[in-house]
Image (cartoon, rainbow, N blue to C red):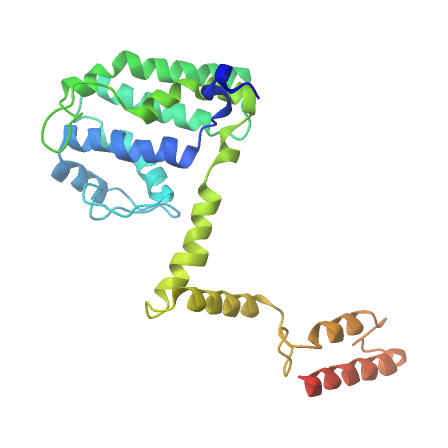
Length: 264
C-alpha cells in the first residue's frame, strides 16, 4: 500500500458515538450552559413534560458527570426549545445546524441529496458560529477561548466525502460494543463484592444464560446428557400428542427423560 500518498480523510471513517454525540456533549452543550446560565438551563430542563422512552432531566444537565450515548441523544432532542428565547437567533441557528448535520449523517440510507444537506448544514454552522463567540459561550475553565481549534469539529469536514467512499457511518458506530460493555461488564461487576471481578462476572453471565434456556423439571440443561436427551425427544414423531396412537412414543420420550435425570 502506498502510505505516503494516502489520504486519512478517506480511510479514517467517522465514529458517530464519540465523534458526533460526544462532541455535542463536550462542546455544544457547554456552549448552551455558558450562554443561558446553569441555573436557568437546569430549570428549563426540569419543567419539560415527561416522554416515554426519553430521559427526564429533573435536576437539569449542568452537573451531570457520567452520561451515556443515550443521554447525549436525549439532550439533543430537547436543547433547541430549551435555549430558545434566551440566546440570539444566530446562536440557535448555529446549534441547530450541527444537530441537522448529525441527524442527516447518521441516516441508515444516504443519497447524494443527503450528502449535500450534510455539507450545507456544516456550512450554515460556520456562517453563524461567531454568535457563540459573541455570547461568550466558548470558554475554558477560567478564560474565554478565542479560537475554533476543536479536532472533532475539524473532523466533520470529511464526513460527506467519507460517506461517498465508504458508505453510511452508522455501521461504524461503537454503540453496540459500548452497550455490551454495560450489560456484560459493568452491571455484573456491580452485583459482586468488588473482589475477584473476572470470576464473579463469568458466574453472573453463566446464571443469566441458564435462566434464558427452556426449563424441564429435574434437568439442568447445562449438564451432561441433557442435550442428547432433548435431541432424542425431538426426533420422536408425534411425541407428547394426546392421540391413542402416540401413547407408545410418549412413553419412550418419558423413559429418555428419566434416564437423563438419573445420569445427571
